[in-house]
Length: 135
Image 1: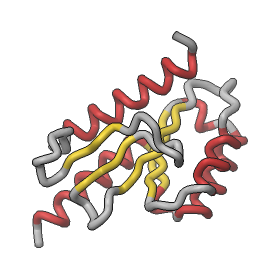
Image 2: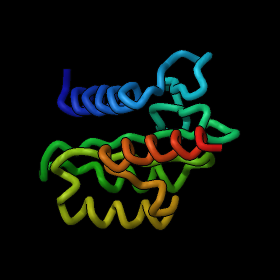
Image 3: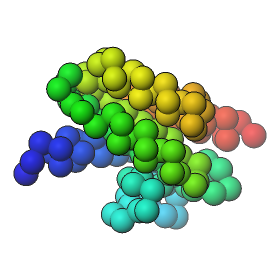
């Protein structure tokens, strides 16, 4: 398995772990659920259901270290998005200056509130669930 595929699978496992830790399952009968996307024209990886009227797509990005060079690819992919999307990133490589610039560009394209580190994504999920359940 090549390094980029390994990192992608690690990030997907991390996202699923976060989702399931806060009670979001893959069971489509549950109030909050997710579905993994195998082929998506927007290069997204997961859809969330139950948080808004329409599914929210999640684009994941993992940068293991400072030698990563995928930042510009993420900016291009995000700029083509048609649906509401959350960009969730993780890894030490996001401290690299080119990645910081890429995050700035992505925030400009989809809004800073839609660009989250893995930890911020977990906090976002908890807040959204609490908000919906308090209504």
